[in-house]
Image: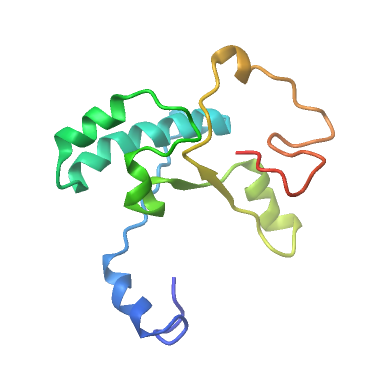
Length: 141
């Protein structure tokens, strides 16, 4: 992660032993999965993990069960990036290793609204990749 301890300052090197990268690599679950399906798995993982790191797991479980609008952050919001964002590597990211000067990694937000099965069955324009729009600044989840 860090080439040397001065690359990001001595504080970063002190934190390195405590960092644990969680990699989910189950071909049965993830090969060919859409970003929506991966987010579903991430949401389940977050719901399983938060009680293990919370000082009041019962209150947390109750809050996790409450149905809130997607734009209103849940209890995981205060637990940092690990429980709110996931790195998402798909075919586009893998192809970028061979075909681009700088590789692509996608960051997926947990707060994106859950789509129904009918809403997920949308047609992707053949000239676009899933999740892109004509507007480069647009948040596409």
